[in-house]
Length: 231
Image 1 (tube, helix red, strand yellow):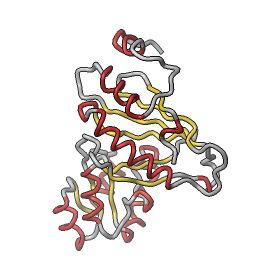
Image 2 (image 1 turned 120 degrees about the vertical axis):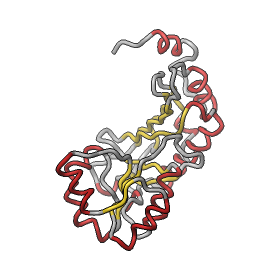
Image 3 (image 1 turned 180 degrees about the vertical axis):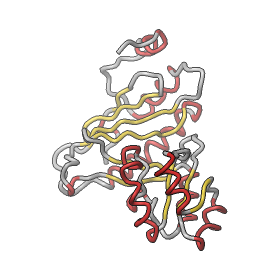
């Protein structure tokens, strides 16, 4: 992959082979970001587990202390008695059958998070083939299937993120925007890593956090010493 001049210039400002502590790494990311838009900062965490086994899955959700900096569009699918709670909490779209049909028949996807109640999962489950590959399928572990739909909507709007392993046992998560500055990004990363460390499966053997890299949207990755984010 060819990289632009700004990306290459950024890589010359630090040693790519060095394992930094959290503050140093996020300081480098914010100082070397050069895009004309407010770049998202993401963390990529390689874990010493095998997600193919049910007892080694790592998945959950957390509300970041400083949010993600992203405007989150919420679709709430619920019955009539929950509509007011979802609307009052700030959901952009609230309904039931009409939105399920809109997704199925029109391929409508103008939302970032789908939250539903347990009594609607029978219908929402039909959307699995459409929502699953996009990471939008509601799940109780992520707090997106819950009877308290108002609270779930408020948390999503406040910056709740889901963490889960991909096929290579890596977790990819946004932790904010470059404009947050290093201090707020550190707080968000600390909260995320605390949750991931608490979610360590009993079946996990050896080193749990194998590698940790932070990067802005258009910037190079900066490596963090895994020992600095393990508990």
